[in-house]
Image (tube, rainbow, N blue to C red; front, side, top):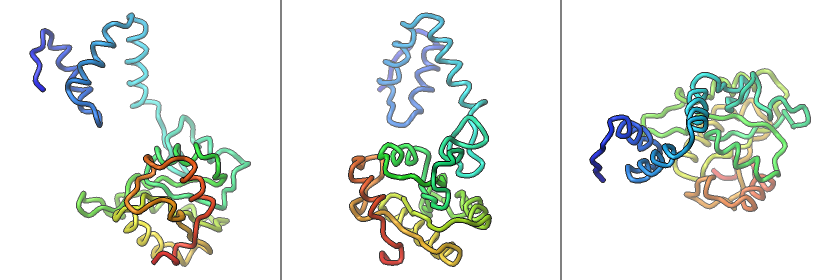
Length: 205
């Protein structure tokens, strides 16, 4: 949808908001106009919060999760079982699994999945850092918690072939997670049960 703007500043703001996933021009305009109704203090706080994303956000040195310190809260928690690593595609998947309250191990964020159509290969993912964690020892299980899509399964098979000689147990989510499902659309009960009832990966070949 095309709008005639009375202000270049307004047009620029709408253009930037519309770059966000799922935000069209109409929604972007509504958001910007809402912000303009806020007082200056609230608007400054909003802007500074966005700016701090680029300057203050860090990535956990162990699992690559987003955090504020050297280690994320999960990796820093000594009560967690650090011998089990759950491998996920992105930070959002960590949040989804944590919401189930069924998993007490730690995570490793790949930063994507293998997708030749999108030009994403193994070298583009956080696999080397995962291998480094494994080489440090004391890892007894990897859980492959990737979406049940063709790209997710391709990544699962690649990781299994590359890491199976180094890890006693490699498991994957139970197929309560349907083929083609992405984690963000799965209810917490189903996902939690899939974590608890995970199965050895080689059984799914």
